Length: 162
Image 1 (cartoon, one colour):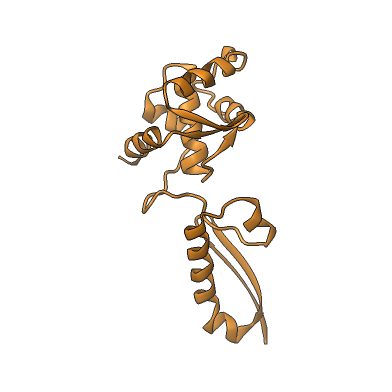
Image 2 (image 1 turned 90 degrees about the vertical axis):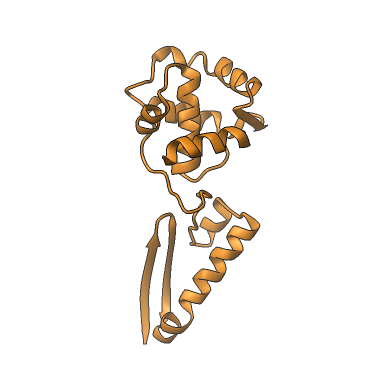
């Protein structure tokens, strides 16, 4: 007998259609093996989505941070454009599970923070990003692609987890 199953746990999502006996006997083991493989190889992003499997991209061990950019900005006591960019980077990393993000992603995310965003932040984005690189909070890993610097990521994780 053919059955369908949809499993969703956090960011992990899988659809399966096939024999009921496989669902009962092998699907859980297969899901665990795929999840472990992705964790070990740190495979994230489009390659997993092309196969119809969405695996967790959030690497915060035992702790998933939730909320909007506004929520994170509140917790971080944001006072400036640079601070808001860090809140957006934390949102992209910890909430959306993306450890690298484009300049465009950052701009879109800061603009969603209606409690903090000011129109002057957009034209000054390049200056803010350059200063955050100099202060070792963001790394430019490719042209116009950024990631939180490891020490800053650890600091933010600690602040946002408490």
